Length: 148
Image (cartoon, rainbow, N blue to C red):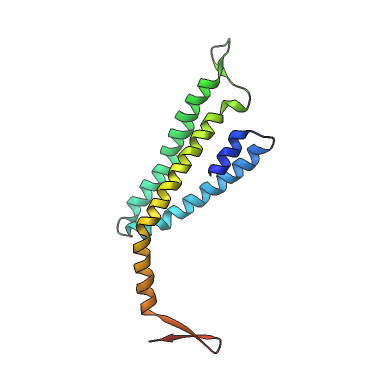
């Protein structure tokens, strides 16, 4: 997502399409990954509650904070007042700061993801070792065979 937001902030010809595609793909992948990650990290006992909290953070809360507040405030800072009483802004500079702030937020999120993966590495190692000790696979004449 960082690359998508940087491409959008550069405002080169055609960068709106490329940046939007990158951000959209990454956002879709992130939402798809968050569901199984929540069930793996927190279990399925309170899965409904955890899933709804994740969706609340993703869709309405994040959209309000970044799209409505952040983009609106930074747009108004860049816009010039018009005679009719509103603000207007034309050009690439209107949302450049917004895209930079969102890229920084994505970098912070990436750092937190790395921290989470480091902290949960021991858990996944234990799960892998316990599954491997229950079933051992060895090739035999081109077929897999369960060894006990």
